[in-house]
Image 1 (cartoon, rainbow, N blue to C red):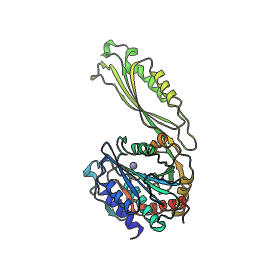
Image 2 (cartoon, protein in one colour; image 1 turned 30 degrees about the horizontal axis):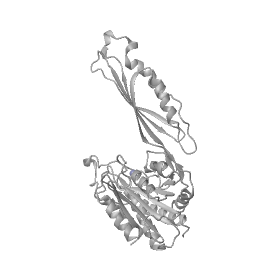
Image 3 (cartoon, rainbow, N blue to C red; image 1 turned 30 degrees about the vertical axis):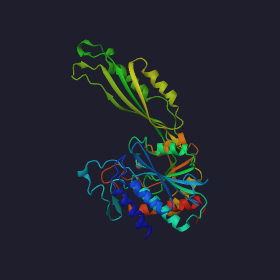
Image 4 (cartoon, rainbow, N blue to C red; image 1 turned 90 degrees about the vertical axis):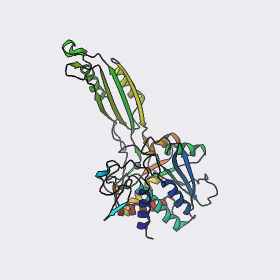
Length: 389
Ligand SMILES: [Zn+2]
């Protein structure tokens, strides 16, 4: 069976297992079976009903947790977002459909394609090398990435830490490429902080309320101050911290009513250089003149992984298969890499995967040829990482 048939077969098998987050739809058992066939020792881990998988392959296989010093961990998720408006799909979302070089189906790009390429790469690497390499290959797969994500990678990493398993290099197969496969690899992501503010004023008749008592008028300058706060500047790896007001809601219900309350929501996408404690203090200072409440919600901590051995191997493998010089990037939304700083702060994290063509959209698709190349790139990364040719 050629490489393409296997990657295509794997991704098709995964797409037809309907795994809307946090359900795995049978994907975890499917991968358990495949990895067991390859000689991995597999543990399925269920936390609060969410299925996850941890698997290890090494030269002695004596002990499930016996990770050798040089470990390459493949990390991914098999859950997908719901199909959305089914009428807008040209093909059934959970029936993998190929047209020319394009594979359609929910999860094709985010991220069953990446998982299939990882599986095919391990398949080919182990078929060539058997146990004859110095180190361990591990897999961490979750069905809880697209949702709350409390019982997915985060829980597995905490569990691994308790078992005293060390993780030192982690390759995430998320769709990290921008325009062409391998044009960038991600070595970190910005953090995300939400603020929800309720400001209380005095409802009144427009004919009997003075302008200076109108809560909207009073709040506008404060919003402008919030939008103009000094935030961390960009550097070699991270863009500048960005602030966005995403909601301003005040409605008296009629044109002659001055509203009593204003609801505001904002989001901060921040780099590791941003001091969050002092940022919150600045926001509190600006809002101090108002009768208000504020709720903070940290949806993701930023993370940054200094490029080392794995990033170098990834760049090299990309160069030899695509002739591209991959850029390091930290752009985009958050990823499961965000859970490492708390559990494995020294682990090197690299995200390398398909071009993000259509994640979470209707008619999600990816290029079949690209998945084949991605699988070859992953296999070369394994070779370089373990000094195998
Ligand atoms: Zn994803």
